[in-house]
Image: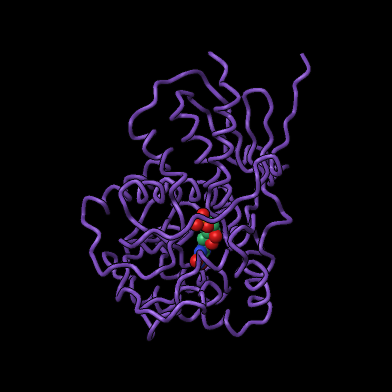
Length: 324
Ligand SMILES: Cc1cc2nc3c(=O)[nH]c(=O)nc-3n(C[C@H](O)[C@H](O)[C@H](O)COP(=O)(O)O)c2cc1C
């Protein structure tokens, strides 16, 4: 096997840190040793109130692992990926080993390129339907990574899930600890290397919609606007539950988000019902028999928003040298 150029590894790590994470906490670290890259959970960056069991942080680390993998594949390197390989080390989320050369496909190059355009779009979307072919492509993307997508308009779960989003949002709005944590991570300046900058927030909604985006992500400097009436909502599911399923779901979620970006679709998240115990239990009951729900995506057409910054790769990378 020819050795990857350092620039390919640089590019792969730059792709990894472009992954989405709750409040842009970037709860990851990377260790590079010879032809192995480890993705590790950074416990200090797990949201203590919204994500006490690091579930969302594992989704984010799974997304970072997917970005690493797709960038290496697009550059002609095959990889072997192991998720949570060591039960004694739950912080070791994924290990990627380079496994020879393999010609990249156009589809892989398209997704790798989308990594640097994908962003969370919290602005109003157009009332324009996502056509069946685009819906099918996102379903296929989730399946490719061992996950599933359920469109809530097709499954009959739209109304109860939208109601849980609104219920969780209002519980969080009156919870001091939630508000304090969200306030710490949001409304940052445009160059903040982490957290959600004000420029990435949407305008306050005019009237109440069927779903509510996070109030903590509203930009009060903008005039109120009407949001789309009924956005397409998709739940990312896996058959199993637990930490391994969460990392897998993160990888599936990321392939879905990149496929959406490549197809010109805007995406954002509605995580509130996963974060308060009562609504989370209701959500799991609602999906009983269908799979384990991990995240909820809002998908549609809109105008691109701004990319948010990341901490530099040097800050999250440890390089180990192997003694021979
Ligand atoms: C597991 C997870 C849950 C998220 N939940 C929300 C959410 O409920 N509301 C929201 O506006 N953004 C949510 N996000 C998006 C992050 O805030 C976003 O990824 C981060 O600020 C970085 O911005 P970017 O996605 O534009 O690169 C979530 C992201 C992840 C990975």
